[in-house]
Image (cartoon, rainbow, N blue to C red; front, side):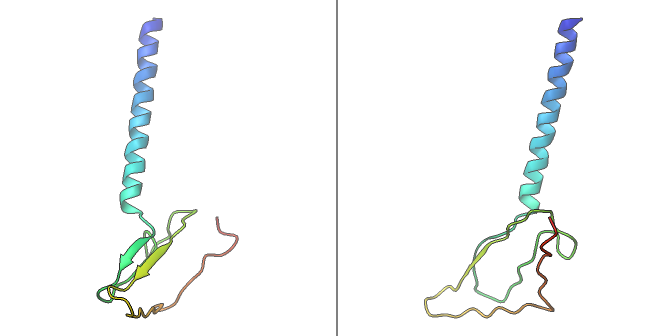
Length: 89
């Protein structure tokens, strides 16, 4: 009885760990926020899940660069720019 119980517990634990790894991998692939971008043509940057709500505790940091030295980048916030409320967590 004890051996069977241990096998079931180990199977359940392995399934739990496997499920968590799959969940983390899928979040990492679909909810990337931030990175380095070299701008060659007009483009948009959005929060993960835009226009819907994005996951909590996101730290989106973008490094935007032009392809050639001396080129300038124009940033427009269309149609508006919302900052997250300080009380939002």
